[in-house]
Length: 166
Image 1: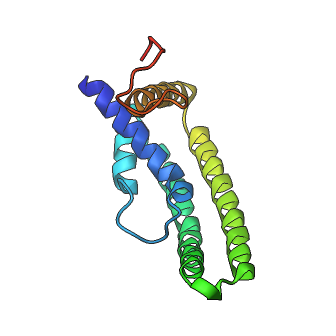
Image 2: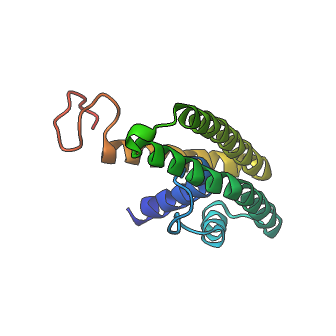
Image 3: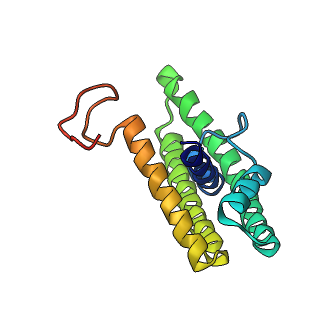
């Protein structure tokens, strides 16, 4: 059980670090999960990373994080534009809202691409064995999340399901 928890935390940390930029669109706020050092440490422990691999993965993650900072800031500004226009009563500016929504779409698209690119770059640093182990960890994480939160179409957590596997 502890091993599964550790693997889940490692996989979650990697996902947060690599995917957090695109899923955390609310702009600046509280710390969004484990920092790069914690993620690298967990990955190193679980995947037996070499020093060179640690360095290369750290560079990838830090580059992705810095690329996403300006986008996250801008998303916060755009969301504020949307909020202020939705609360403005008779002063609704449809053009400003449409422009903000379009820009949010462009930024989100760019961030999604950057996440996928970073994931690919990290996987390229890993050996075949390490990639296989990472894949297993991610699959277990997905299965665990599915049981915790319910899969689409299965109702709310706590409700009975026709699916006997859950």
